[in-house]
Image 1 (tube, rainbow, N blue to C red):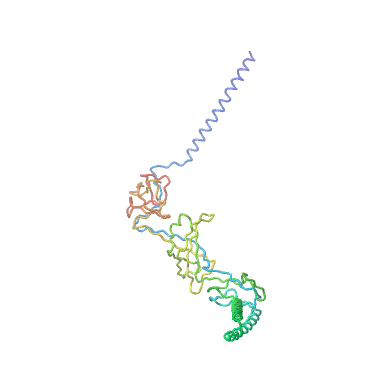
Image 2 (cartoon, rainbow, N blue to C red):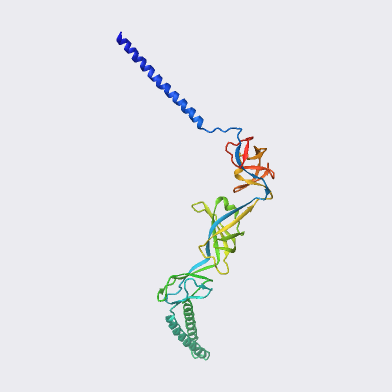
Length: 356
């Protein structure tokens, strides 16, 4: 009998202990839920919500954009030798301003001048032969073929003389256009071969200004239109660039080049490599109500909150244009309306509001 009683007590304990543990867990969960509810904020519908507002005004919408770009030279070239020979003298230094046709480098031409003297002696001799054979041919003292050979020899010598004169002229390497010497690649005493660059000339009288714009902004530019360009270290410079190229191929960052031609200042104060900012302004057609785009709620059905008699009133509006951070409203608002611009959390139609 004692054994049976002991077994019953064991069974009872096995049943009661899990029940007690389960009860404790449920009590703890209920307490945690109650504590969580007490810590969560519940908005009191009768309590006023603090908002920021602005008074609606009628006006013309205008949006300004600024694009940063870089100035590049309109023309730049490396002036090369056309004939081979030793460099006698480099006549310019880096930074010198040069004019079109100005001598930059002088090659040694003494050997060519000696060759020219020999050809000139040959030309004089052939001219004498032609004159003598002409007289003899008229007297039938020589055959006409001898006179013809003398004339052909004279023409060949004159061609050779002209070739040498051209080569001698090319030993003086000249500037192809007005500009500034921006690099020297050789010095006096070096040997120059045809095609070897000697001096770099950069034309900064006119500059190219290039900006990279996003696909969404590409339609704002038209070839031939002018835009104002500002340079940070030259605030007094009044620069205007005319669009010469609107890019048709994007770079890896999906940005398109827009290139403008700009006239430099009279003192050539703008240097190649400087940065500038192009100012672009666009206006809406006609007048309208202009409000911050952030004040519009409702997604596909645009609405705004107005403050009337201390309460928020949800007002449908018709938006005709969005320009950056501002939108143009055609219907639904009028000048003088008080528009909620910030403080939309827990805000609904009819909620009391306190204007900050």
